[in-house]
Length: 446
Image (cartoon, one colour):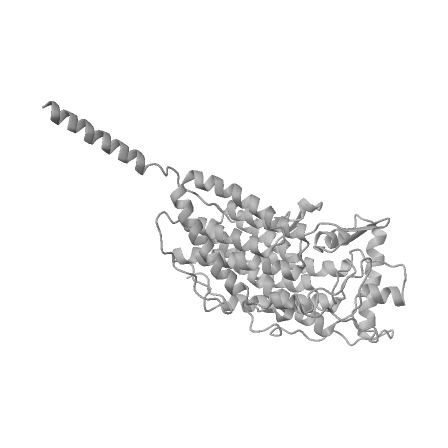
């Protein structure tokens, strides 16, 4: 009897110990949309620190989103893989170990790791990543390690595809050659007189469009500084608008609009013999910020938020490829150069002229594409308050729709004195045509 009692106690103790052992990974690792927003925001901050050009920044946003999306779509039957839709993308590896595999966690790890490979200041993102790793590992070691292993495997797969988009080759291509014999051609502008950035960006492999020239716009008005010609009128219009709005002072609504949508990471400030750059986001980053605002307002979960980021970032990236293809084809001179030559040698635009040719307006093309893409996700009459620029010293502006915001972003370039009307109006149409193509081509929701 005593022996049976001892055996019973022993069995009970074994069961209790087994229960404790099974419960050791006590907590599920919950990944929220805020985790994704925070990761995107952190990468944006690092890109500002590293001063990436607008086209390059768009590439940095796109690849991590695609990698994370593919992980999410593998586990979620409501979403469809981008394989067969995005140029040269092949299926991601299927996980070999699914013990405790947390797909949202793996997707976020993929996003962070690909972002780390695309920026310069890796240590800034590595410290952020390691702080997250420490929390997740404490919450559930088994789930974390399985998800991490798979997330990094997918990151390797996407990175191999990414490395074949011609970006590395364009780093060694010739600098842009300025033609001073042709008065219509772009010339470097004050105060830094920088070389034209990314003259070979049309060589980058597109994500969705067939080629860089697929949405080639109509040419700009023929160059002529003869009074009465269309081109002369456009130059004079920029000059006249700038005089009119600067007379109103800094409280001018037009100046506020120009400053809000500036998004020029190359703004140089001179102090005595020193010249330094101020920190600003790029046009693509501004629209990624609007994507975050819309996702939060709509109460989107992790999967829906990742879907919105991915679709929008691909449209933005292809818009830059399309726009830069035209910029270095038409190679048109900026208003600042001509106004200084023909009207007022002391004139300065409201915004600092960015270092690349004028036609078409990059912000107009990107805003047209992003605005239409976001409309396809969130709806046509989606009112929102845009506070994207608050961290950079600017306020909040309110819009009744994404297309209304895109129109304001486009016209801001004329108010800023850095673009002619044709570049703005043709540019936003170019972007919307591209955006509609993206909407028609992409089948992301099943």
